[in-house]
Length: 316
Image 1 (tube, rainbow, N blue to C red):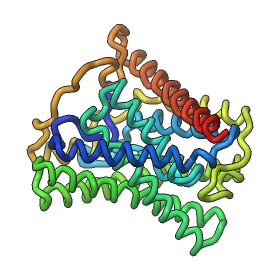
Image 2 (tube, rainbow, N blue to C red):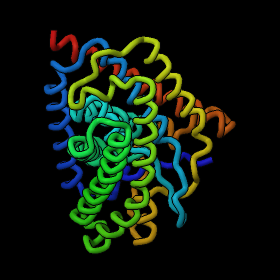
Image 3 (cartoon, rainbow, N blue to C red):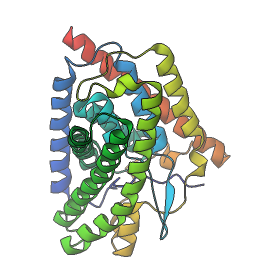
Image 4 (tube, one colour):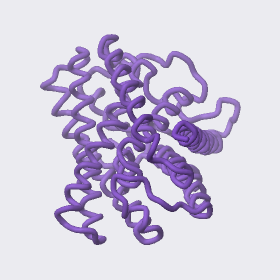
């Protein structure tokens, strides 16, 4: 069984100390500003929805889908969160997801965590949200408009995040720009299709069940029932239970690193808690993997829920 990291999860060793420090500075600044921007936006009914979205994104990222050529990929989720709750709330959601992945499961490096948050949380959220809003203005408010805007926003958010990662690798001296940039762009042009398909699928489900969540645009939705939140969290746990179906093929960044001879620059994790989405004391790898992903799903839900509660108290 293989629980592979998400596309663009940069491990320790791929970024120089200076580049990693810049990434941390940018991530801290983005999170701080996101906390400021969402302080007056989130109410009691939006907070559980943030947690549900974070839980679903975390669980969905555990399922890699084969895309051919010995490569796999899966949802990033920043654009989906940004469409429903706005880009600044999406930054908080994605920072929590990526942070829990790195700190608890050693998925992505601790030194590289700053740029992993920037690439997968900030860039994807704002790129996807901007494209989605602009295309909605062109095509209107119907179902087809949502499909087109969600698909293009999802695909483009993956592409720009991949390009950013390629530039960071080049500046770090890990791979020349004329190698890293086209390699990351080509591989993730295919992986972006997964982002587009899952984003459209999720938007279609929401459009059919809770259309009001898509009617607000940049503001948080006004109504979220406890029953809907419960169903959403249960759905996230069901997705987590499907994690053993993940493809064993390497993700986009790992594939590029192997093809361009810099995979050996990846450093071992600084420590091991639940490495590679496993629970060390559970012998059955499938059971341990499912429980690890389910545990992470609940932890991410709790972290984001507590952030939302703290935002509400700060606003009061």
